[in-house]
Image (cartoon, rainbow, N blue to C red; front, side):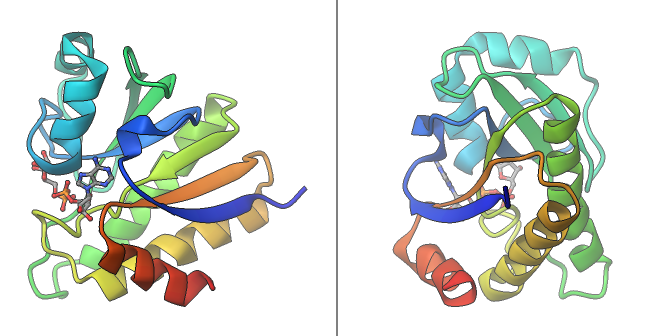
Length: 168
Ligand code: AR6
């Protein structure tokens, strides 16, 4: 069965999927935006587990439990800070998606939800980031059909419209 790819508008912490992806920073010790929301909803045990991971380089991903979240797992990935586009940002953002998907498959997960990584505090232009997100997910799921469902979770109507425009 081909992987179902869908877009939803809302708060990723409420989604009932196997894993939600966190747009973290290299410390993995929490922050604002979606990172803050995930830590708040998961509870302090998430931070405890994250402390043991020793951080994560930009473009890579790490997995922890989901604790009080409906999702059983959280995949933490660190997107690039947008610096104009000539600092390898596109490749690093693509790696976030690929490494997160790979971790999910390695764990035998069936469903995963992504926020719009790097497009908030890290200022990646939404249109370009959306193109990369959708492109990477399509490429990965064409090669491996292990995942049943990939969700793009958009917090704003504007982001939802950007995804909708590219996915249809
Ligand atoms: N559910 C889904 N999406 C959300 C939620 C939510 N609850 N809250 C925000 N977003 P950002 P970044 C969207 O800034 O740009 C943190 O402090 C938001 O509207 O969360 O990768 C980390 O610790 C935007 O579209 O992540 C890092 O230091 C998207 O999530 C830094 O921010 C990403 O925005 C990472 O910056």
